[in-house]
Figure 1 (cartoon, rainbow, N blue to C red):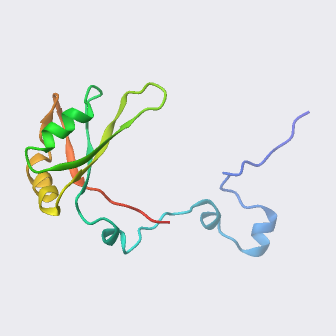
Figure 2: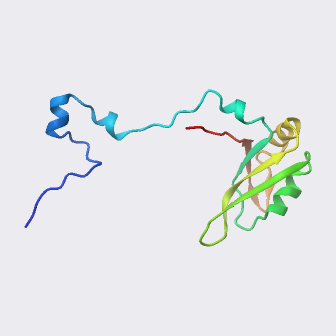
Length: 126
C-alpha cells in the first residue's frame, strides 16, 4: 500500500493555503530579531572567544587574558558527552577598558597553537 504523505517542510501549498492566499515563506521561516537594547544589557566587559584548542583549560584562558587586565570570570563551553571543549568560551573582565584592551591586543593572538578570535559578547532577548 503506498500513499503520499506531505512533509511539514514541503514548500508546496496545501489546497487550504491556496484558497486563503498564504505564502510558504510566512509559515516556514521564523527569524530571530536582535533587540535594540542588546548593548544596554551587556555593559561591555563580557567577551566571546572562539577558535580555542580542545586542550585549553579555564586556567589557560585566565592566564592569557590576565595580561591585559583583571579577569573576573571564565566559562569554557564543554561538550556534555565527551567533556571536551567545544572551541569557544566566555570571559568577564573587571572593567570595560580591560575588555576593550583584550579585544584590541588579543584578537587574532595564538593560544596553544591556535589563532583565537576575541569580540564583545552579544546577548539576545526573545
